[in-house]
Image 1 (tube, each protein chain N blue to C red):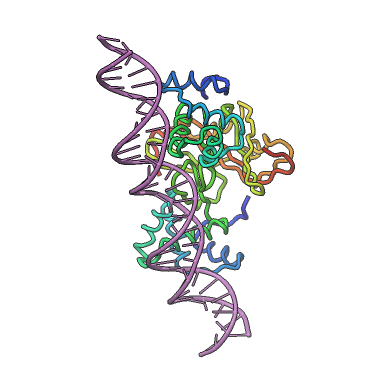
Image 2: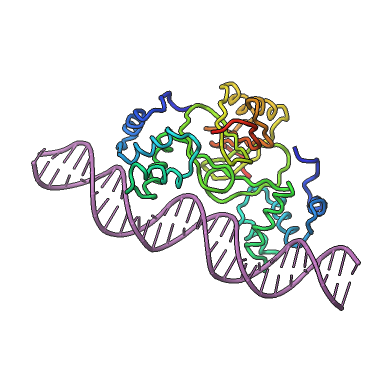
Length: 144
Length: 144
DNA sequence: GTCTTAACTTAGAATAGTTCTAATTATCAC
DNA sequence: GTGATAATTAGAACTATTCTAAGTTAAGAC
């Protein structure tokens, strides 16, 4: 789906470079924040976390950088139901489980063959670039 | 998943009644609009269509009624990527294909066993009430 | 090294989509 | 009909996001 690359801060500079973009302190800190706590934060939550390290950053920059990371395929933007977009640095194929009682979101790894089976339901003439699978329900125990 | 019921205007009164809600002209017209043109309209688009029949309806009522229909399981609210919520009166299990070139959304019927296979990837402790599958890509030919 | 140019960040204004509030109107049970 | 409850309405308020225009930083040409 996307080229193999390990989800580390180092990957950032490489990916940006291949897209003709610069690695800036803001982009690094924001990517670091996403890697550090993978709880699918909103842009506002990222903003709050980044400000502890970089108090002068602006919210507009957070939006800009998140968008850049999404463009570089280092981060996925996640939208289930109305409400703010959430950001996820997990590059492996995975689904999302949205726990309605806690409001939290969990990554569910997907075996490669499942995505093939799912895509097989598409009639001829439909060419899918990506598939998203979202569960909604309750998780008994666990966290994230 | 939801009780068998045919997606006709008649179903509306029954469903509302069993939820202790009233069937009003506004709710009927809005549901009719959704059934008539199943192109996953936004609340604004529903508002525009409803106004040709009922020029005095307010946008707030459109939002209220759509929410009511969603609560009654007569309509699904669909959210892929930031942007307005779209509404879909298709009650059969189906996925959505979002055509990036035209911006349109197509229903893809799902065989019952596929949803089982997909749900089977959930680890113990995860109890899913619903699954949503969204494709993104290009549809060559077709419309809707 | 300095100049030029383009990329990036910033603050605040603007916009889009949705929800809230308070007042009015319609409907139902009696 | 009367009272209680539900639904609708207009407009204000709110949230999430994007836009704008100015300022800053970095990279490459010379």
